[in-house]
Image (cartoon, rainbow, N blue to C red):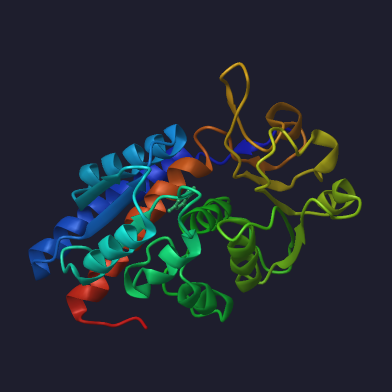
Length: 289
Ligand code: GUN
């Protein structure tokens, strides 16, 4: 069997086109133009690329962008002052502080300072709690994109065995919660899981988010499984590969997402979707916390 491709790039483009139309309609109806503040501290090259792509996508969809690029020497107090200012700015409906932050800054303290109603990353403890409780406000962008991609296959999730490899707060844990809410039976694997390949082989839905190039090999995948690859790893020769060994896994899986052109573009589309949601709530005067 050769898997069908889950084309995140084209799915994301459709979603972004729809958001562009919604942004115009919202502004015409209410005068509110959705706005995203993007905060980058320092000069990490990967972060700079991610931030540039996010800002470009906002521009294309007609969102307002408040761009804040701060030096690597910015103090935690200065960053918290900026977050406070953005929390109070009525033109800003979403605040994204790009991670990782420099080592001298307590990243959790900064995430905790973002108003939950503007936390389009869904990383604030309030939003994590709402997600776990099954009553989410802002759902983290990559996990939200992963679920949309799985749904795009048309395969029902109810009762399926789902295995998530990787337990990060940003991807693994929220993906597991969302799959659970879709009535899948969810197992989380990590570096200390015993016989991880055997656990993966049970998966009808396999999400790889472990950050190790080509970690999921062909023999770890059940025939016909839906495989989502969240990894973006740069090899020594400059090539970009996922956490899944694409060619052999494609020969076993039923569906597979590529890297690049898979989850990455969906993360950006979901960021726009979350910012639009925030703006709609602001337009109706609806509070969050
Ligand atoms: N760094 C890597 N992924 C993300 C993300 O989804 N949001 C933010 N803010 N930083 C990141």
